[in-house]
Length: 132
Image 1 (cartoon, helix red, strand yellow):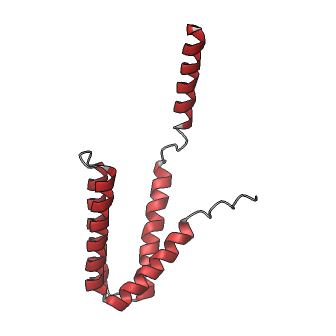
Image 2: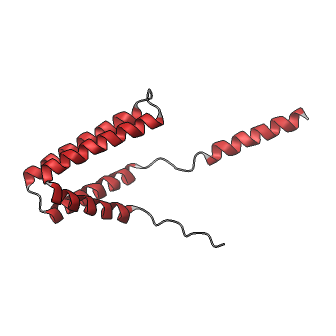
Image 3: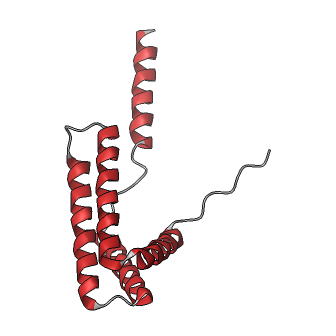
C-alpha cells in the first residue's frame, strides 16, 4: 500500500512539473524580433502623429523611464501582487500624464488609439467560443 501511495505521489509531482514548463524561454532572435517590432511600431506612431524630433525624444525618455520603473516593481520581492499592480497603475498614470503634457491632449488621444491598434495587431486572436 505504501508503494502505491508513493508511486502516485511521484507521478503527480512529475505531471505537475512537466505541465509547469509549457513556455520555453525566448531565444535571442525572438527577443531581437520583438524589440525591432516594438521600435517599428513606435516610429510608425510618431510618423502618423507628426511629432517633431524634440517631442519624440521626450516621449522615448518617458516610455523608457516608465518601463524601467515597471521592471523594478516586478522584481521587488517585498511587494505583494496587489501592491505591485497598484504601483504599476501609479507609474502608468504618471506616464500618461507626462505624455499628455508633451503631446497635448488631442495628440495623446490619437497616440492612445494608434498604440491600441498596434497592440491588437500583435495579439493572437482569441480562441473560438465552445459550442453548446
